[in-house]
Amino acid sequence: MPIRAADQIIHKAAWLYYTHGLRQDEVAQRLEISRASVAMYLRRAREIGIVTITTSSELFSDDVLARELEDATGLTTAWIVPEDRQAMDPAAEMPVVAASVFLELINKGERVGVAWGRTVYHIADVMPFADLRGVTVVQLCGNLGAPYSYRPDQCTTEIARRLNAEGINFYAPLVLSSERLAEELRGEPVIREQLAAISDCQLALYSVGGIEEDSHLVKCGALSAQGMHEMGEKGAAGVIAGQLIDHDGRWMDCAHNRRCISADLDSIRAIKKRMLVVQEDNKFEPLIAALKGGFASHLVITSSMARRVLEHWSRERLGKGGLSMA
Image (tube, rainbow, N blue to C red; front, side, top):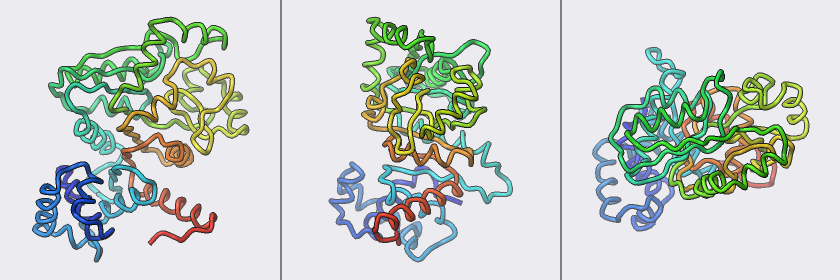
C-alpha cells in the first residue's frame, strides 16, 4: 500500500535528503518550500518510518518506484496506482487517484486547461465536489460532433461544475474541412484570444491518445482508419489535445494538424503544472512520446507502466553510452 497522499511531500523530502544527499536548503529549493518545513518533514519521516526506503520496504515499494521515475524522467511528481490489490480494480481506482491529485494541484484563482477523451471524462465523473469559485476551467481544443462521447465540452463543463468554477467552452470544431478554413477561423478575434490565453493556465489535465485505427480521432471522424494508419507510417506516435505528435513528442507538420483548432503545443508546454494521466497498457509508445515532448510535469500511471518506462529510459541511456540507472 502506498503512503497517503498527504504524506507524499514527506516521502519526497526524505528521498532527496537521504538518497540524493541534498542539503536541507537544497531540498527546500527543489520542493519550493521553506527550510523549516523540510526539517519538520524529515523529523516526521523518521517517526513514521519513511527513512527506511533506502533499505527497501513493501510498504513503500510503489512510492520508491515513483521517486525513481521522477529521477529518470525529470518529472516533478509521479503517482503510482498499484495493481496488486485483490480488493481494488486499477481501472476503477485510476480516475479516483487522478481526481484527488488534480484537486491538490489547483489553487484558488487559477486557470485550468482541460482536454478530452475517456480518461479525462472518467476523472470528471468521479471528482468530488469542491468550492473553488475564482477558478476558471477552459477547453484546450475545439469540440466534436454531438453523438460522440467524452467530448471536450462535456469534460470541461463537468469539471467546472464539480469545482463550482467558471467553465469556458470552445465553440469551434476540433477539425475543419480545409486548412484554409482552419487558418481563417484561428484568425477570428474570439478564437485567437482564447487560444492565446491557454498559455496563461497554471494547470492542465489531459491524457495522451494512441494512433490505433480505432482511436478517438478515428471514432469521432477526425481521421479515417486508413489515414491514421498512414500517419503512423510517417512517424506519428500519439495525440495531444487532438494533435498528432511524433516519437520525440514533436508536433507533426501534416494536413490533420493544420486543420485542427487546438492549443499550440508550445502553449501547453508553457503551463507549469501539466498533469498527464495514462491508464491503458497500449498507450506505452504514446506515453514515451509525451514524456520526451515535455508534456508532463505530474504523471499518474499504473505500477506496471512505470516499470516499463524506467526500463525504456535505462535502455536509451545505455544506447547513448550513458550509465545504467541504479
